[in-house]
Image (cartoon, one colour):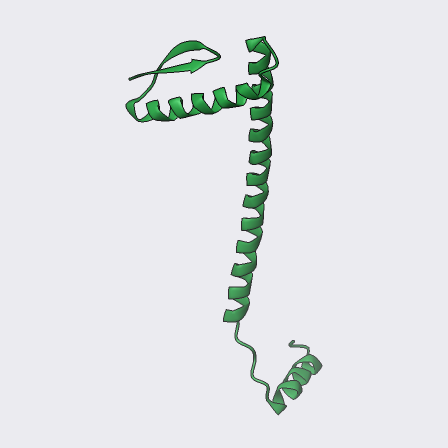
Amino acid sequence: MQATIKILGEDYAIECADCDGRRIEDLAKALEARLQGFSGDTSGMRRLVLTALGLMDEVQATSAALARSRIEIERLTDMVVEAKLEAQTPEPPDTPDRGRVNALRVAQGRA
């Protein structure tokens, strides 16, 4: 399939898969809208560079936020696993003999 897009008044034909044509057209429209934000500048290349820098900044900020989110998910998952393991560990029965048996083991050097 070939998608035809218009950026700064120029038509561009882009070869793509059938499933990607609509996405490319939508991206081109979004890019054109961003480029309009620099309408005071008559140089199309300068507007493209400024828009590209803004987009790269957004991508890097989003990537950093995603990395922080993944770390937080891993930390929380570890906490859940630790809590489940602690919940599965049975508590020793609290009997009056418990302290004496442990004291006897310590006295005999077997603890």
